Length: 189
Image (cartoon, rainbow, N blue to C red; front, side, top):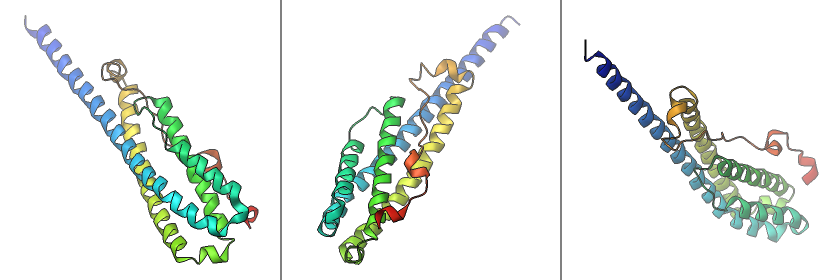
């Protein structure tokens, strides 16, 4: 019976260690998922200049749209601190704004028969659609990993151990307001 308090202390310490290890594992999984999004965003970013180059040949009247997409791409490609939830949120918002801008560009392409039948543009659009599908999958993986991380941090005793694990509640990926609403294609026709 004299050893009972020590056994309880040891059991509690072991449980706390495993909870701590779980938080670290989930934090790393969330960072991996964020990295997966970044890989796909980089693919999209590398594809955009090709699309813009082809589009410029046909879309002389859409210079403002093309310039806007270029600016959004530059903003979305800036470096950020993956361990800072605010920086991650800003990065994800910039990526979402770029997706919205590219969506407007793709709708505008439909108004140019020569452009939408150009083989280079058709291939670029197909590739772009594939990359967007991969980005969507990476975002789902990220949100699932963030859910697990945030739950482990916000539930006791994780709330006590999160600081030791250098883990903070991370933002979910959410579409920007422009992406949530319907697209009015008549504005581009």
